[in-house]
Every structure is written in C-alpha cells, then in structure tokens.
Image (cartoon, rainbow, N blue to C red; front, side, top):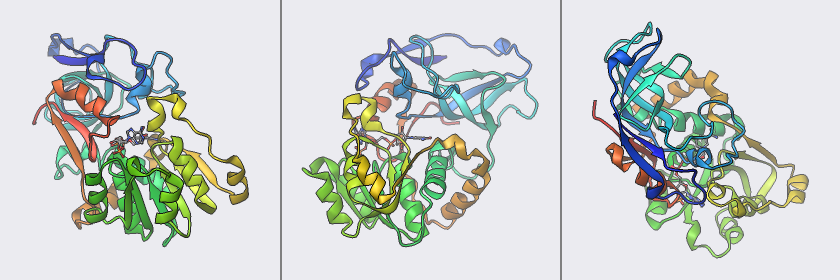
Length: 342
Ligand code: NDP
C-alpha cells in the first residue's frame, strides 16, 4: 500500500520535496473492528485547506478529523471516492462505490466513526462525486444560495473563479439570473470563464496594476455579492466597490495560506456605512441540504446546463505536484488524483 505523508511541517508555499512516498503491507486480516471497511481508493480530492493542517502551529479552529493538524510521517487523510474491497460493517458490500474520508494512499482501512457514505447516482463518472457532486459542489451550493442570499439580477463577483468551487458558484449564479464576473490567474482561464462557462466578464488579476479600478471597470454600478476564495488584497478592493447591503461569503483565503502577511484589512468604515454582511462558512454547515443540492445539481447536469471542470492527475506519485500546483494556479477546475481506474 503506497501512501503519501509530509516529511515535516510545511511553512510557506508547499513544494514537491515536502512529501514522501512510503510503501507498507495491508491485508484483509487487518480488519479488526466490527465496523471497519477496507476501501480501494480511486479518486483523491486535492484541496488547499490541507496546507493549513501541515503548518507547525495549525491555525485551524476546527476539531473534526477533516481539519485536525497533520503529523509528519503519517499518511495524509482527506476526502475521496473508492470501492469497498472487504467490509465488516452492515450495509457496505464488496464492490460498493463509496465517498468519505480516506487517505493519500492506495487502500484505506476506514474505522467506525469516520465519514463514509455509499454512493447513489452512480450513472455519473465516479470522479463527479469528488467535485461537482461532492464537497466542492456542496460548498458552492451552500455558500451561494444560503450565505450570499442572491436575488435575480444582482451583480456577483467570484475570485479563483476557474477553480473547483469558484467555477460552480459562477455557473449557479448565472443559472439563477445574476450578472457574474470572475477573476483568475491566466489568460486561458479568463477565456474559459467568458467563452465556455458563460460568465458575463472576467479578468486576469495578475495583469491588473490596480484591483479597485479593475473591479470598477467590470462593475460600474457596484458589486452586490462577493464569493471570496482568496482573501488578501482582493477582499480590500471588493469592499471599496461593494454596494449598500452587499454580502460577502468567505469560503477561503488561499492567498493567506502561504503568506499570512498577505492579509489586508478591508476598510471597516466602508463595511459600517454600506451595511455589508461578511460571513464565513464551512461546507459541512449545509449537510442537511445535501439532498436539495444533489437534486438541483443532477438536474442541471442532466439538462447539460452545467459544465464539469475536472483536472485529474494520474497515479499516487503525482500527489505532491498536484497539491503544490494549487498554490501556483496550475489547476483548472476540480483538482484530483486518480489512484486506480475501478
Ligand atoms: P481551487 O480549485 O480554486 O484551486 C486553487 C486556486 O486558487 C488556484 O488554481 C489559483 O487559481 C488560486 N490561487 C492560488 N494561490 C492564489 C493566491 N495567492 N491568490 C489568489 N488566488 C490564488 O481550489 P478550491 O476550489 O478547492 O478552493 C477554493 C477556496 O475555497 C480555497 O480558499 C479553499 O480553502 C476554500 N474552500 C472552502 C471550503 C469551505 O467549506 N469553506 C470547502 C472547499 C474549499 P488562479 O489562477 O485564479 O490564481
């Protein structure tokens, strides 16, 4: 069983050399507990938040195993999709497709108490259950419909808009009837947002010398909703362009994961006078709406209204580069690693 762990705590931008690949043996005899399930891992989700778990002093305030600090030398755990190889747990049979907290490894022995769900809607590719029908999709759904509280015709701005969560938010917002602008870090991504995903406008934030002016150009009448994936300077520039009673959903602050100094405080007096609401959230907050999320998203997929953006690397050895690439903007859409085909 090949697995990936961090060699030591990671500070700053992650590099391939921060990780090590190990090999050990796992057998079905190792299934000890009465509720254990042995899963063959197929697709592993590669997520920016994992970097916060790799830091020496994790800034995470979350106590669930999703966000607990990682231990150097121990296999990184994370979300993914696999197939049951052997099970001592009622309701899980050999061959069942499952999604839950597995690991950056070929096989995971999933113990009692760890999130593992049997998959339905398996007429879609299993990879969809990592991204569009998995946690990225639920994050976009909960953040946009619940936290942003959109109204038709409102002006929506999305950062990291070609990424896993961002592209889905932008597409939901368009389908809902909003005016949507996204930013991303390359010309190719900007073209994709405008020409394939139907964004009204998009810009490359790396080419803008003044973010406030770039936003003013795209939103001459101001921004009503900001879905924030990046934090930092962009948040400050958005607040300056926000309308009265605007809403900011803080999904993540990736610019600050590699550099805490990238944190810039927005103008708080603007927040006061414009009566802006800023709300952070976690995908798990919306687990009770999972059925609604699946119904809406599956409906859009079946009617070909949603484009699925996946960025899949092959083989466990590609995990370090896939992960480090998130912070270089290498990915377009949901980044995942395919460990096995079926
Ligand atoms: P993405 O697929 O968007 O990948 C990360 C992207 O972020 C990169 O491709 C890059 O695109 C952009 N990026 C990287 N570094 C920077 C930087 N310094 N400044 C600005 N942009 C940068 O990842 P996800 O969709 O999985 O995650 C997006 C955000 O949502 C993250 O902050 C993540 O932590 C958060 N998140 C929060 C969840 C929650 O429950 N609250 C759940 C899932 C994700 P570009 O070309 O645009 O630079």
